[in-house]
Image (cartoon, rainbow, N blue to C red; front, side):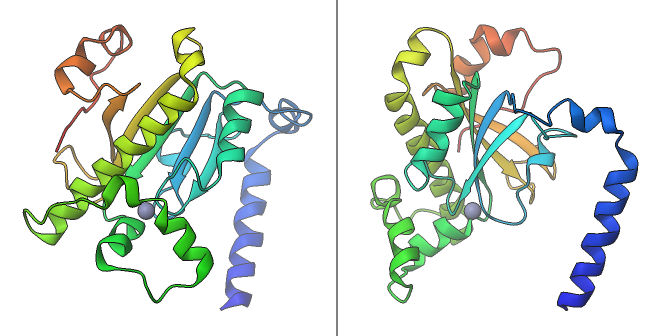
Length: 217
Ligand SMILES: [Zn+2]
């Protein structure tokens, strides 16, 4: 297993090296200048290249279970306050294991995992039992996303006021649970605005070349 994986890494990294020129690397060899700070779930089904063809030097990627603000606050602050990316994208996803673990109970987990699931409590502790388990997962993915955006809006309020930061909450839908197609990024929240009509009316959305999928569960 490890042998096969290492072979795969060697081969695919060699392909990567061959496909990119020296100039490509020299552009970012001595410093990074990303445009997006991304908080996404560590889930292996969620990767930066679903957002951009080439996320290198574009996406400052912070990953943890449940795409949370507080689990790795220093890393998020580094992207926003030090690298000064103009966008903070918080990316939830369908079928999130952290959300499911919270709903099912996680008493058997060790201290470190428990600590990172406990921080979902303010977002999810009062979830209702309406709908199927799958529907409840989706509702809670949205609740968690809104909660994380709320924390970010509070923390970076000054930057929002000055127009130096836009906070985007979106869900990566690899199961077509939201009906926009498999693999679609669906917008749910901008700077705390969650009403799809209000989001649609925002100048940043009005000026897009192509329409973006916007939803609310
Ligand atoms: Zn997840």
